[in-house]
Image (cartoon, rainbow, N blue to C red; front, side, top):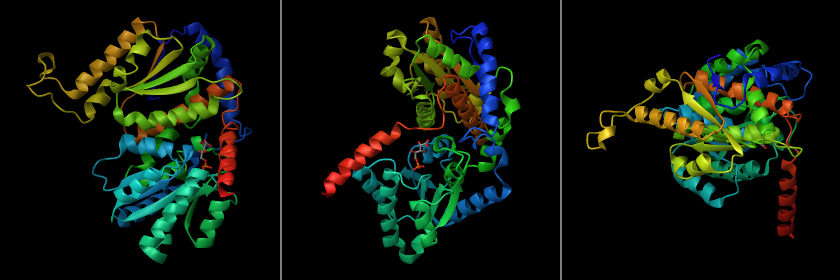
Length: 416
Ligand code: PA5
């Protein structure tokens, strides 16, 4: 596996990890058994058909051909995976701006998007598995009207719907209006859907290779890929949790990693946080957050452990780089930004390990579609296994209903 997990500084000894391997392997077998609900994602990167990939690529080419902006409406798992990948990988020369909305009720946000799009040509994609999510459907009603005002009867040919296979409000409306529709399988939940059309269509429109992305997932989408020590990360985090480390701080030195962190927060938060249990996922981007949270990490309450993302040396060298000018502080002159960023990463690692903080390091060889696909699939498996080890269902989110119920009650009161 190209993803490397360094547990040498996690504070969890080898014995404890080895003791957890049988249980983790059993949970992995359960995921692959075909008997557990909502495990359709497990083999999806391997079984996504050539026909489906071509349809997605052709649709993306069509959108890239007639639009400069792709406006994607979705909430939670219906946008975070695609946004994470696009933020990390989209080339500045891709010629396409992908804007995400439909995950809040902010009027300012909606109006700002309309202003930002200006008179550029736009296509609209609405993504909701249930076809009923309030934030997404509210935004859809607004942007559908806006599209119709701009394009009249041609608007329909610029709108795309991605929704669950079964009959729902959004699917029925799309079918009635002749809107192009992609389906998300019933057996794949939102936060595990980045390898389905939910993630793939926006990623393809951004000009990123979905074949490479899928190949990265596919390389691990077989039970054998997680034999031996490959589930040790899931075991270690449960072990740390048992020792009172209730918060996992995901850290990166890449500012474009921000939404990857949001995706991880959703994946772990919704999968594990139930029945009074769960490791609270938290994300920090360095070195920005060293100037705000660095103090807490170094000397604050020891309630957390850290999971630090790094690129191996070769990966860092291959990325864009910039030399430090001669006018800089003496010790910086002659170096490059990447070199200094790497020194900051190693410096933080050393300082935190010396302070006794458990640090897990996860590294990949390079930041490209293949390896980002691999990393996302890796985390989906680790998260599901970890939740099963904690004896909670990784695939439901019963707690989310409460806020929806209360919000609807308040909206109904408005109408009266
Ligand atoms: O992981 C999940 O299932 C959720 O986060 C959903 O993705 C989110 O609530 C959006 O749901 P829907 O796709 O039905 O609009």
